[in-house]
Amino acid sequence: MSNTRQSVNIRARFLELFADAGFRNSPGLSLVQPSIKTSFLFSVGFVDVLAAIAGKATELDGAATVQRCFRHFDVERVGDDRHLSFFEMAGALRCSGWTVEDLAIPLVKYLLESCQLPMERLHATFFNGDDVWGNFLEPDHQARNAYVTAGIRENQIWPGDNSTNIWFEGANSGTERSGICGPHSEIFFDMDPGKDGTPGANPLTHPERFLEVSNIVTITHQAHTGPSGDIVPLPQPLVELAMGMERVEMAMAGLFDVHQSPKLHAIGQTVREACNSLPEEENNKALRIAVDHVRAITNLMADGGRPGPKGQGHVVRRLFRGLLEASDSLKLNICQSFPQLSQTVALVDASINPNLEPQMDTINEIFIGEARRMLAQSK
Figure 1 (cartoon, rainbow, N blue to C red):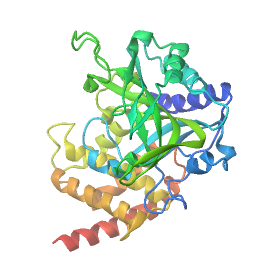
Figure 2: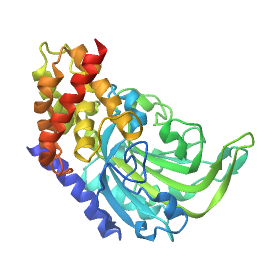
Figure 3: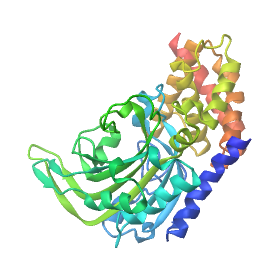
Figure 4: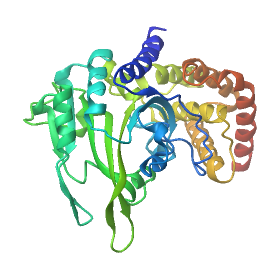
């Protein structure tokens, strides 16, 4: 219970600190959004960023939120110690009259004071200037100086190039570099400062030792694909902060594995108890996939997502298929166990999704019916 309380508090504290810095609380949205036809909400709730760039969504300027997200393009990466398809992300956005300091100062204050992360283990990266599609983009000194002002030590701020510190919208879906883009600066937590004595070890040279907890993107350009790919400045640049809450919990607890964070550990324990034979290792890949997919399916269906042949339905069905395969590997009777597993999800995620408990009967009925149909087809 104390872990759950801590989980709630760090989310509330993020919104409080950003409110103190002049941001207003923007309520989290449903994962099912009319503007996203083929997937689900995978940003920090600001689904009209393109409208903001065009100067048509001024209500987003100065907004902060903690939002449930689902990234279909991360499904294949689930199973390691850091990636999830469903997670929570804190975010804040400024559209006009901004500086990176507007986001960096409350962010660093939050990490130091609310999360009590030690300063000596916080590192930042910034774009140090490079050629991007034949265009030289200047170093993002504003970001570097913002982190210095916020309190990050200068010898823990590292320069990156276009391979590490330029963000492209298209990268979110695994496509070529395309869409809106711009320099980004990240904050990392050194998970094991005593691991080696390599001089200058940093997030860019030793990524396995460092955990990314937040990212500030300065969206400044539009990329045009084609034989003569080019980037052009945007009429309305903006700056956006994104921070994974499960990652923050990992750093706070000194955990190398996201599946040991409070919520995922609770779901994982329920999965293990439901298995006919327990996995030999807690970091069993099939177990990790089952935990992630049970949580994702339950939250998506609570918001109205349903399995189907295309678009969002295809995404949900893909999760079903992955869960069935993981269950088979675990010798888990998923049709029998799913109501118990979904109930655990409803308990741990009650504070972030009020739709869960009222939708339990519907979620379980639809899941079991679809799972049985898929299992019958596979025989």
